Length: 312
Picture (cartoon, rainbow, N blue to C red):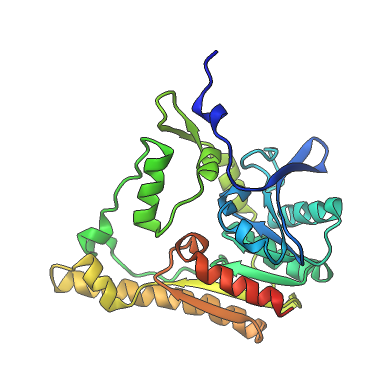
């Protein structure tokens, strides 16, 4: 009998997989990495909980660590509706209730930051702390722009295409472009596998992606009472970017400088908005980090989360 590579694959991360009902015929995948101490709940955005397969076991030495795959992704149910911030927050609360988890620390990346902000503001008594992984963001703000991408150095304009020949090849491409790679189990959630071992179609539907964006809600930081740790990915220093991207003329150098300034302005606006409403929030800036800071800079993320949880 033929056994596909997908069937042969065994996720090496030491978690237990369970499913929690969050409504009629709807359930969410929950990963439990074990551990002892205050519960930590890991939340992702367009990714499943398996993206934390490498990070979570390192947190379990001092905490009980769980991850939740949101509806519409991976092994969780994929209903036609229910993708607004309020729905996602309700899903998380129902998982906490089902597993009898009290006052956890929520850690969120991407749309996981939406979950943190909504839960922290609407269910303040349910959480002990919030950790934003480059996800403390108000997407309702007017964009800061004014850059012509065509004027940037070629090395910045022309990015390499992902290597889809195998999961390993894709991970190597990620290491070059993100400073780290997703666990293979996560890639298998995101892409189907073809008979020759190459990556197939992207598994997250446009319907789900559009519904998640349509359900975005501005954060109500002023209602959050729990302690906050916010890690932000910052661009490399301009001098380092010049060495990396090698502008060939004055126009390219000026465009690179403009992009750097705009990137800093975008970061500063989000940071200052958070800090104004939550003055005691701990802000950690990580220059040169990718948006997936837990992949590109896991040591910093682990250190900061451990210290934050220990200080609660």
